[in-house]
Amino acid sequence: MKQITLATYILTRLKELNTNHVFGIPGDYVLPFFDEILDGDHGVKHVLPRNELNGTYAADGYAKLNGFGAMVVTFGVGSLSCTNAIAGAYADDTPLMVIAGTPTVKVLSTPTERRYHHVIENNFDTNIDMFKHITCASQRLVDLSIATFEVDQMLRKAMQTKKPVYLEVPYDLQTALVPAPTRPLDLMLEQSSMTNLNAALEASVALLEKSHTRSVLTGHLLQREGMIKQGVQLVDQLNAAVATTFTCKMGDFEDHPNSVGIYMGEVSEDYTKEMMDGADVAIALGVTFNEFDTGVFSTRLGQQQDVIWIRKDYVEINGERYDMVYLRDFVPALLAAIRHIDAGELSLQSRRKFAFELNDKFTPTDNELTIDRLFVQFANYLQAGDMLYGDTGGFINSSQAEFPADVVMHGCGNWGSLGAGFGMFVGANFANEQHNRRSVSIQGEGAFTMSAQDLATLIEHKKDLALFILDNAGYGAERAIHPGVERAYNDIAVWKYEKLGEALGGTEGTDVHSYVVNTEKEMDAIFTALKEPKGVNIVRVMLDPNDSASFNLRFSQLLQH
Image (tube, rainbow, N blue to C red):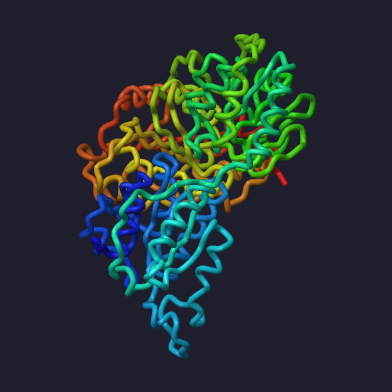
């Protein structure tokens, strides 16, 4: 039987999950693993981020596009630097693995008064104990005879739950020999309870049979489960009005003829609320009841209508819960069960569905940019198939733009960690090697400065992209949440973003192109020039510190505590 190192075994399994790159920062306890990344026969490439937090954000962004991500770090100082990003992946249902090298099995198992570096009070279990709260599985490999079984089990659990996992691999086990896989990774996921599934189907069909109008609200779990196509089929079969959510902005639904916009409770457009809240039956498809998707819990979905909530692992119909019914099983079963049901009544109107619509007419002027006017321009810049990543202000305002077909947008989601969006964008650019989407990111400069070092990673790997940095000299989102009070804590030091490309290793005019934009006409010219961006394009967009998008102001009022 062929023997390979344990590190190569892990990397081979990651490759099976469409993880063609691993992000990782070397450290003394994990150096043998890095040797195997470079020398092993597994087909996985290494990407070196500038710190562990950014690297884990990158693994998250990679997973959101390719299905799974991985970050490799050393013990303690490396692994604990990943925790904020892992918490975000857990909150937003993103499967990925953090692999941490540790001291040898002998050191780990021998009581001693010696103080090893990267270790807290000689307690080698501290990291695992911390990660248990923000992963679906957190463990250390210590028995080589069952190590491959444990690796497979962890990966299977990550894919089952769509949550991150944390794996510690001792120094001496990383290059220890284990049998090579003889068959593909078994991803036979836990099956739904057929009793509960059939009961939920019966109740759903009964509601849909007697209904005349239907609405479908799409959530991010639909994307995580790879069921966007089935979601579109459900809208078609029911002839339902369809709306997206903050964490599931997708052109597949917004370009659909039945689209009625983005639904975020009370901050939605009036037409969107009427169509979603006023249908006889509403189906919340892969939607979680989080603060952003519900407009800070202001949604009225289901208050005066029948509602079917299809969650990741249960279905709830008018308050009655059916456990152990998985979205991935229920949606195909529902599609089959409603074939006999007539298409619903749907009377669409030419009313505003988005704050920034594709058909909004815009004539650029010599006036200084405002956020509301900028995002009208930005909506018209988007094109079919784009990959869009945003952070905080950029993400919130981009969510209100109407998307063309097949546009995908990801960002910090409900976790809301400043800096996450750009880190995710870095990772997505490596996942994008097999998708070839136009790569676009729009960042508030406050968030961007928290993870900006990895602009160097994009330059180093000669990625083609357009990066728009909204410069309003501070934390615009916080200013909107806490209005009427001028506080220096929301002001940040001014960076010359147009100089970053060269400072981080690029050559201006060759692999980096930088711009400063003040007026609408200048912005229009940049959007035209960057229809097909080549190299790393950095656009510093100058905005008034006191300006805020109309939508953001409405949303921020709900967030005020």
